[in-house]
Image (cartoon, rainbow, N blue to C red):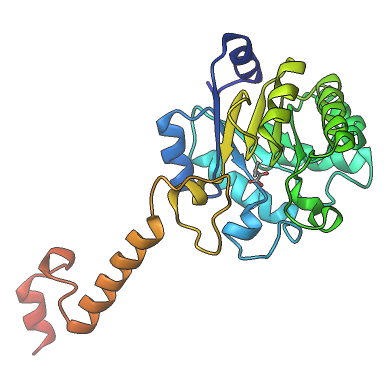
Length: 276
Ligand code: KIV
């Protein structure tokens, strides 16, 4: 049985921290699931850390479904959340419903996430009404990077802080089961966390959130283009990979790989027949 939204919501009053990580492939998702992380987000950060785009904007439903299915196949206990890509929930409620349903029916996810506050609440409540759990996402919403003028800290002015609080309250009211707070001051994230009854999951939002989410490549140190300030590298996988690949390269060039251990042999009599 996978983690449910009720189990996640019940963690807040108990003061139990919620952990969430992104995953995009079968093998990584399997490791995350076996560790016991309850929430796995197939984030549209896929666009940058896996597909090499400059932003999340080019990511399509087909990209997301392809990777969501792989993550679902690699997991047993975690709730898998599909991140709705740019323009798949903006045009109409009908399109938002259709695309959310695809994550559940074709992708095998148990929930979806979408960016935005007050402006998306109608869509959130209609998706929830159809039986699909929704995670909100406010603060720095990367799909709006062009409107925001870059990947900047959000909610620093009184108006912006007030707007974020209103967005969080509106998402709670619309039926979201949790809200990601991205790149907002610790004090504001803490205040929002105290004002709503559903868990807040922070990324660059400080220690006062109910839980934390990180991009798997950032904590493993496998993405080398940049390291966001909010990320802690628990490993330097890129260095480990680079030295393993260099060793392989050198051994092939030197003729020392493969050895008998990585090779297969055949019956000498069959070989003798071939040589006649
Ligand atoms: O796409 C993503 O990985 C996300 C996280 C940063 C929350 O939305």
